[in-house]
Length: 478
Image 1 (cartoon, rainbow, N blue to C red):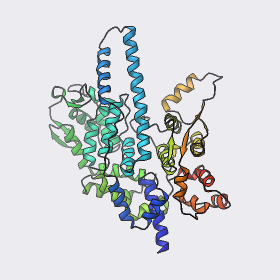
Image 2 (image 1 turned 120 degrees about the vertical axis):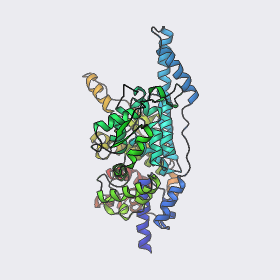
Image 3 (image 1 turned 90 degrees about the vertical axis):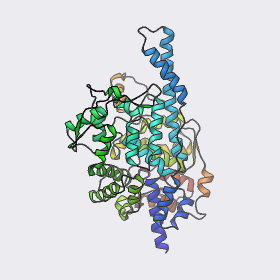
Image 4 (image 1 turned 60 degrees about the horizontal axis):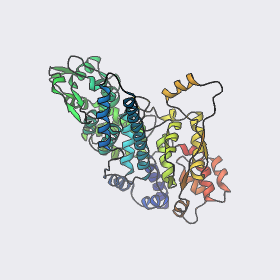
């Protein structure tokens, strides 16, 4: 039995490392006594609650949008109107930052971690940038609401969201002048993957989505006068298709189930997809009518999910890294703005993907400067130190920085992280007689190598061990 408990301990820890944002020691001990399938069921049960983010006041944003339209319609602006326009931009930027921090705080504090983890997955899959914080919040709430539900519903709702309609130019898609941008990305990035459709399919699909727009209040609107009512031929079928018919035809194609299952596999299991396992998931996904929970349960209860090559071998994304560390040690950020600097420096600023394909992930998360910063962050967050921000810049920023860097450029400012960890809470959660070596095993997902064993073998304190271990490259793996 003891051996089985130990295996279960490792399995539950792995499940929570991937499907959640880590797990506390007391919870891990309690769950290790249960059958892994029961643990998976409970993880889903905890995530049935859906709580919208409400950071952005929609009424305030609508007033500002109306004012923007008014100012945008004028030939000449007075100085006062120019100032007004600048003020609107300033407020929108401020609300966007608040939205970002609020979501990161939600990830750190949530008691529905699988739902938030899947929201993070869809956030990268349906990657979108919007200068309008209300649109960004709407899309994030759509991704959260349907995160574990029907992929069809999620896809339709995302396609109707003002954030996506604006980002992929469907506002400009009208009868006689189709804009193909949304139709192309719908197939290339959201459903089928490149090479599984023709240019003609894109043209016909774009005609079907003509007239999908949003109104001045940021609500979806189908404009009949802009919609092409003619027959379209898509994937060999002909009819007077609208956007939803196109989505249904795309979902009938088993390649869609395969494409999404492969992305889920890469996100949850291993950067290198095992095509036999992907096929197993895809068949189930399609058989279950694109029920996202069903395909995830299939994955989390598969033997291969817990196989050694899939444990402790994935690089944490910057969001997972920050959330994991903050949850693990019950961190409070006294100046949450620092979280924005940290995300930017690490190369994953939420709500600001590099492009419509999202963050590439995997090894691209790590370069020499971001790895150095990652290894410094734990001691700064847990030991309240200074930080030097010179990690990854946004690819767009990097080009600008390179052009504008004067020869005698000053180094970037140092700033204090100004965070507190609840050490008493962390330490009292550990078994009374835990040894530094066992603490290292708990904190790291990969198996300990000899170097780490030797390093912590003679450690006296648990706190110093925790700081030392979280500062290792191995802590970057989940």
